[in-house]
Length: 283
View 1: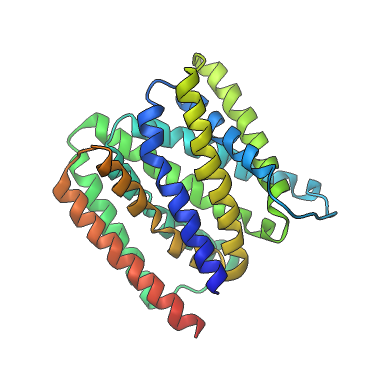
View 2: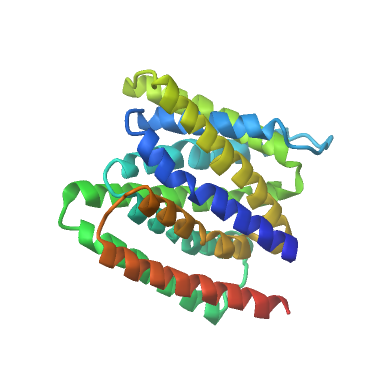
């Protein structure tokens, strides 16, 4: 329980802080190229993971392709598209929607129990997301940006839930397989979209962001899922938006501060409710 919770917090922090960094250094890089570079970093980190297992991943090839297309190609590309249209703090907080969608997928796929407290927490967090999205409805560019981020969140939630049966495997082969498929798909999409090669500095920073926010974070996420389950891991991982929003504001990002403050408060209440529910359920 303790190990899984700490792993989930680590996954949230390492992923959350990279969001504003991707926004700043990926502005001159194509969305699909950004996705490929992020997972180049992830696969580099995956090569350093320990563990050995003689069980082949080939029987799970279809599952790996699905999670790669969702989480290693579509989601980061959609996030990059969204980050070009809305401020980093709002985009980070919108990632809080992932908890709700992951819990829903966990319920549909694995029949995980959703308690009354957890349902209230998800509704409160959903309200926080509505507060963030509402100011963008009158601006087409910002509204589309919010939509891109929300679709990215749905892709990541699906990725997390579908990946759960792979949590018993060593992390290294799973991350490598997912990353390589995602990189190949993203490079193909970047070529079709006519994206140019990224600047060396920006590309290097995005690779570093991928190593932290997608390689290390994924390893910690898988460890957490193995110990506390998909829904509970998602509840702790929902702290990721706060790390991202804090870094974004520290970097000088400014949006609708009133909406951001209200949304952050609602998301915080949701996180506390989920954490309390988790503790009571386990004891």
